[in-house]
Image 1 (tube, rainbow, N blue to C red):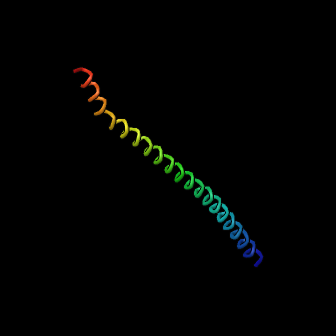
Image 2 (tube, rainbow, N blue to C red; image 1 turned 135 degrees about the vertical axis):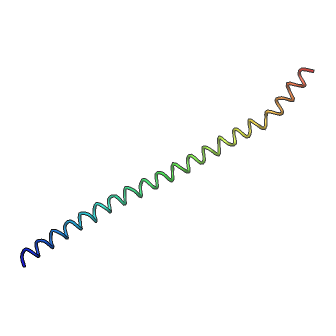
Image 3 (spheres, one colour; image 1 turned 120 degrees about the horizontal axis):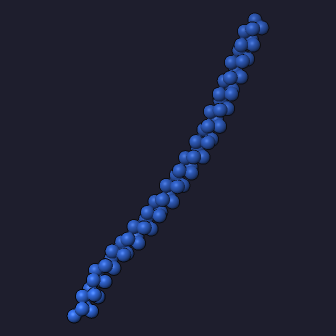
Length: 73
């Protein structure tokens, strides 16, 4: 009976250690997920800003070409 209780106690301790390890890993993964989401939002914002700059530059090209053509005549 004593051996069975000892074995049960050891098993419970291993289960508790596993549960703690999983809880720690879960917290770490949640933090990584938040960090990844924040990075994605920052990247999307930067891409939007870059897209706006490119579109603005492209919209000026025809006007620039017209100015050059007018100056040549």
